[in-house]
Amino acid sequence: MPRIKPLSEKDYPSEIKIAFIQHTTVYNSRITNMKATLGHSGTAFKAYMQWYPLFEEVKAITGLRLATLFAWSISEAADCPLCSTYFRKMIIEAGESPEALVVSDEEQALLTFGAAIARNRGFVEDAEFVPVRKRYTDSEIVLLTAFAGIMIATNIFNNVNGTEIDTYLNPFKPEHTI
Image (cartoon, rainbow, N blue to C red; front, top):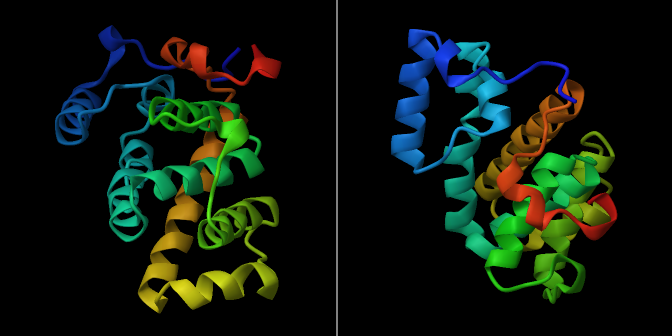
């Protein structure tokens, strides 16, 4: 049960209606339980929606598949059921099984890096950083780290507020959580 209920469409203040319309138009995205909960604060909504431009830049560096796996690895390590389920959906819809992923050593290095950031509150050992350092430039590492940070912030927001998993994600929950 959510600690803070998402705003219902009839209760959207004008500022939030406009922000939601802009968001759904620009990103062809739905207003989820998380976004409707963020709608209680226009500033919070705008801050968290910076996830989208960061994800676009991560995709430009890594490709959609690895960007999705990176976000999923962070969300799994942060124990965020909502975000993990969202990325499971993306992985499954791309034709893969989250439980049987086949990744290269370079891909695994990035997934390990992302999970370490989440699991260790940003304290990443050299063993987890150096392989990423070999593959990515300073600018790319800054972007990947910033994306991991906003992904973790999203995980924290959902966990703290008990944001319910949207019904459209139910078929993608791991079997042990259904």
